Amino acid sequence: MLSPIKLDAGVPLHFHSKDGREATAHVVSCQPVGSDNRTWRLGTKLDRPENFWGLADYPNDWPISAQMAASISRSGFQTDTNQPPKAVVDRIVRQLEAQVKRTIAESVRPLQEELSGLKEKLARREGTASRFEVSLSSIPPELEQQLGLRLENNLGPRVLEEARQQAAHLLAAANAAITQRTSEGYDNFVHRVAEELKVVEKRARETSAYISESVREELRRGVENYQAKLVEGGNSLKRLSEELIQYLKDNLDEEHNARRGDLQQLRSSLDLESARLHEQIESLNSRIAKLDQSARTLESGLDQRLSQMASNTLKDTRTELEAVANGIREELTSKAVKVLAAQLDEASSNMKVVQKGIVASVTESLRAQASDTLQVFERAADEVAKLSVEHCRHNLTRALNAAMKSIGEELQSSEEVS
Image (cartoon, rainbow, N blue to C red; front, side, top):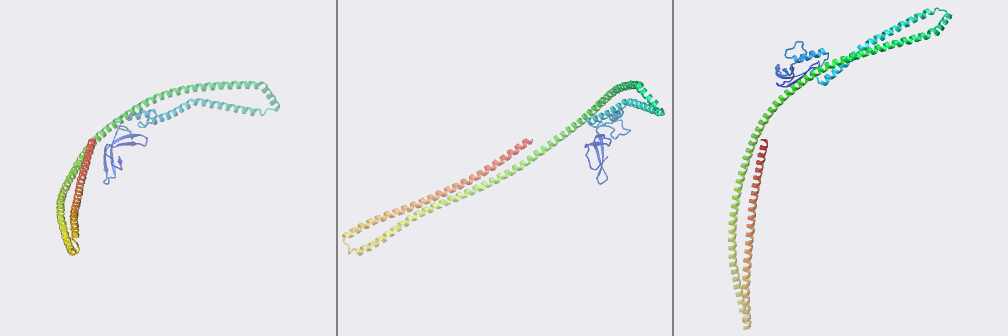
């Protein structure tokens, strides 16, 4: 058998013949014909040994289909064992209808022959009457009239009665013959139909048994194929699950190594950030110490300068006052000198008070500004350090949570697959 495509061994085939026969087979071998690989020669094996091609000489391993074909040919029903039961029943019904019509025609045939005989008799009588009419045409009119009157008066009723009796007798005989033939035909028909029904029932039982056996064999082969495919599917599923587990394991190892590298990189970055923060804190401490020293230096220098300025001012004022006093000493009296001395003492005390207040206020202001600046700087440094540490801690916590969540999901998926 030639095929335009290549078929693997074990592929099922379904054959249809021109006579309406069907058969199933499986591919045994498939060899190329020529070097172009466009035509393939198939070797097939029938699932059920039978004379599918209608050969006169067939092997001995085809007894089932040969017996069925012989029995079906003897019964006169051209049925196919592989046809569906509905088609077989329809064909049997059509053949039974044809046989019933043929039986009815055979039973009615004698009645038709008798009716044809009666028609011939009537035709012969009509011929005799026509000859009699020809012979009566030579009778004189008076005699014909007298004969007519006599026949009408004497023979008319008798002829009508005899014709009526003869017609009734013929009708009764025909009715009896028709009834007898009908009953005989009906009995023969019933007998033949009963025999045909028995034969049909027998053939139907044989056909149903053969069909059930074929269906049982097909089911058995289907179950075996299904079990084989199920075993093969289980093996392939097991192999696929092993490959999937290996793939998940490799993927999990790669993910674990990647996360470990990320954690190490994060740890190194945290170490670098911590070292940088320590350096910044040390720098801040050194700057704060320098600022404290500068404030102390500024405070001591300011005290010295203020005292110097106060002493210089006092010296200048005293010199000017002495000059003024010397200028007006001659004009003023001793009372004025006392008043001036009192005023001078009062001014000197006021200047000392003012000098002390200025020095104290400036010193206090510088100390307050230095302490405020130092506190603001310390708070800013603490906040920056806290924010950096909190940010690093948050990033580290989020990375660790994501890693643990991913590892948990992968472990759960691997457990579900296994």
